[in-house]
Image (tube, rainbow, N blue to C red; front, side, top):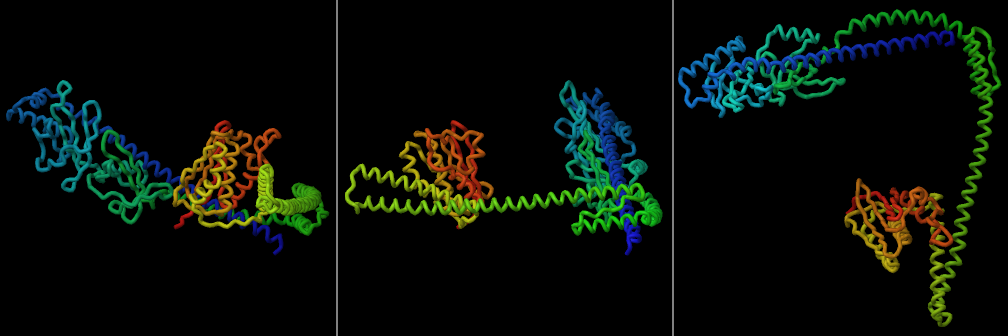
Length: 601
């Protein structure tokens, strides 16, 4: 297909995709916004109803306060005996209070209680005087008004309100009213109009012991809470069958109740459907106009683009000398000029890149040759040095055995010095060989399950006599016998011995070297702590580098060439662990070897 046809088709397809994406995004955003707005309305309405309920304690207190302050009631409660006439007078006051409080509530009961909870006077249906006292009542106000929890009785929902009767600050009785939960349908409809949703208003005890409708019908509690698209949803088939409901709650301060409003999740944000339909129709019209415009515009830009394509293909083949004519419309002319400048810059950059790549390749070959030469030199020198050193050791043994004749004490002393020097030089050569193998990644690691306590006790046996002979106290805090690590036993012992001898080397007589271990998070840590001079903070990042030693001066010689810690850390990492240090100058240093722990019999 020619570019003249392909370009408008492609641009039309892009426009179609953009419009479809716009419609989908708009649909999602409008629906989401509508859902959020609807949910927010319900949430605000829930809080508003809770605040209205919070005003009830003040109304209840006003209706009950006339009884609590009535002198006749106070005399009645403080008298040792009550006459029949007094009881009838108090009952008439309670009946009058009952009519004023809620004349439409046929289940209203008003009672006067003594301080020990005994019912002294009662009005209303005595057969239904159940649920006293007001369990879970919440005290409000200075008059000690309390509102009890909702409870079910005979298919209806009731609650108690109580207020203390006091004389000179002492409680002498309680006035209590049992009220039935009622609702006016017009009120529920007005609340639904506030939210704009078909919702259900519920009440519950804050502790969840009872759920009820606003009309006083006890219902089961909602089940299976789950957040869907950020909204709290439940299954409440007794109220809204075959659909999840969105529910918001708000506690009514001063009462043990919580207001809940729920509405079907499927109807959340259903309003904006008409807006989406109109936008879809406008999108189709825009798509048709856009496709026509694409066909017109493509004819003007096809030919210059074809020339650009030929030039780009030439550059792809490596021909950076191709240039395009810089004519035509203003934008096309600018595009041609920009393309030519780009071709010139790419040609120059390509030339520099090739030159840099050639130089880098030569430098890499030189570096690899130098590194190989260094490794070969170290290996050859180590081998050549070990041969005469082994010969020296052999001749020393011959002399010590007396095969060349008896030795004087001075000669034996000199032979011991020669032997120690030979062993020291052989150790240095061995370190150089191991370091060379680590650098060349040729060292062999044989991992196995190693019991940590066995290795540490072997190390204690080997180094404790020499360290104690220097006047340094050495101690090993026994490890857990069941602690097993995954490591190369020989390499692990080499690291531990190196850390112990290093600690003794930098510790003055009278100091301490302590070896301990612990297990944490699937790893085992072996700690070697000393009371030496410590390591300066600026050297902590350098002591693991090769050929680095502390206080390396002519007047303070130290054994070794500075490879011990380097080799130890590289061996630890080769076994899947690590080696770290923590030091305080003047206090001492602690080296920690971390190895992976394993479970073994």
